[in-house]
Image (cartoon, helix red, strand yellow):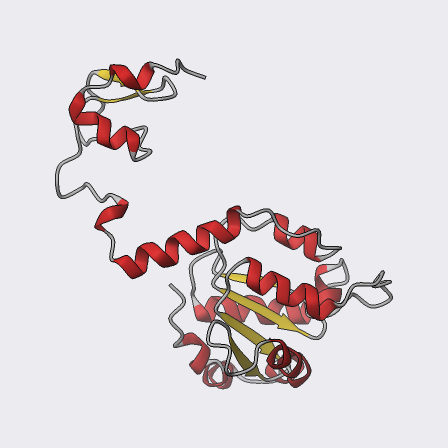
Length: 223
């Protein structure tokens, strides 16, 4: 780690950037004279051009709020979830905007994945074309043969939705959709439950039919 006093040596024109958390500036012409940041790492002594500078304060208030809330959810320590939820939560790197669930998901993520369902959801995600990290597969039931040990899968499912601050829940199959609606009724404006056909039904559709079945989901604003 660098010297605690390193930031004191900054030029006055660079101090606001350092206080905002910026540690490095990259310029087309390359790095100029180096000065230390608060951690002792070199940063460029030349400020960014006005058109390239985009501090958080320049964002729209609603965009700042959504970004801050999503980051806060990911940074908050997750509850002590059992398998397979614990492994799924540990892989989250960016705030998910959508949770996907279906009746057999717990078995699929617990090492008993069905190749047909895996291929189906690869096709679905490719069609939706959302940025990586947008979706989180989150089971609404325990894997087959698992001892619940006093926990309810519905509670774990709801905890995940709340913890990650997810707005949209895609339920493939009437059973999962019914359970999700019990947890998040229509009057709950923070979470919207979307009921979709069973994976087994979608797997029989032709590509254009699958796209039609998912058209409403593709139209969602998840940014």
